Image 1 (cartoon, rainbow, N blue to C red):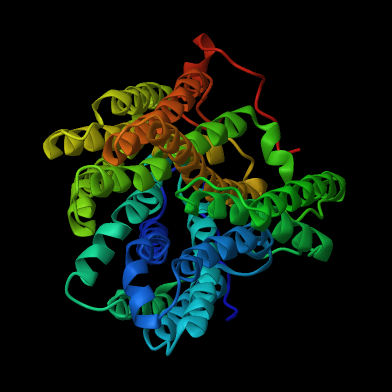
Image 2: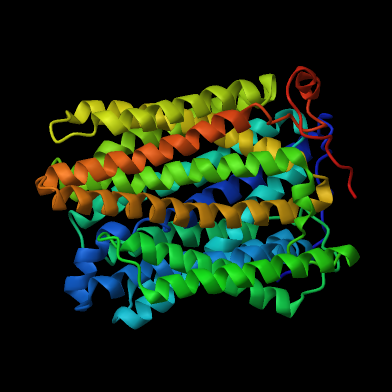
Length: 505
């Protein structure tokens, strides 16, 4: 890590910044956005490459799936530690470390002689990826005034929603003309360019402070979040819906370790020594927004796994065709994000998240009726684009309202908590939707339905559960309040409230 004089962050009051500070802040944030987009993209690119990897590396489907599972597992283990890292080390050093890890992992993956080395490369990649998202969120919260925070958070929405959504499409395009190594070869120059730009242009924008590292908390965090994500991902990978002893054991160990981790943090935060300060949940808006965000992630990743299965298993599409059908929705989210960010700055969260939740619930329930063997592809595109609009209306406001409601000293812990729960929700959404689809599909097949109709019925049932969760999100949306320093804070006076926002205590 390279030491440099820290630069004071922008005032969160909305006061105009000097041009030099404004330009510096934009440079730092834009560099983080591009870099984070590149690293997050790798979270979902490997799924469609499994058949190619099985053939080229002569491995089983279970082994090939570990290239995705190991990535998610590493993310779940590393992200909770980022709250400590962001408080303890300067911005520039953390960025260079994260991009160096990601670039090294990408290079190793591109030249990997076999499965073992490729698996190690994915773990190294994930170590860098896990740091970037909390770093981006925390930096935006530190630098951007409250009055314009929404438009900056729109950039984060592009990263967290669009990158995973278009990952399978990009990998499908690459694999249609090249072998699997090119998924890393094409990314490597971009990653190295981002690292080089960061080395030249990244500045320290926060003041590092003393932050103790509790080793027991690290161990409990790894066992807790890692065990749950591993167990859920293993459950989600079983298309037949079988639950193994390993899956049950992983979830059980994870649940016990997570309970101990929470207890440990509650004790340590009394002396400000927690690895992940759970006082973020004392803020009602953060708690409600986080719950909604998890429902949104379940809907996003659940649809990302179910819709390709429907297109390939029921409609007979190729991998590339199914990726191209989903692509317009990802593009729509990316295009809308900046405009929704500006709208958030003007009207606050509720006018966006309430209709967004309603749209998501409507589309998910619509899927329970229209996903049939004879469905035209244009209807599927239209439905997915509409779902993407609903998700886009929720991402930026939930990010901005949740983290903006926290006192500045909890930004790093809030971003680490939100990103960790994103990984858990993504794994849970995949596992939940697949388990329901598999159970109903087998039940329909046992009743005499043909394979195509049985799978369609299973997918419809899974989306019914997703629609039910989205109905809960509609209710929660009425309780999302603007942050106290927002110009729209007065808007909450006529709306339901849980309790007042806490002070910095």
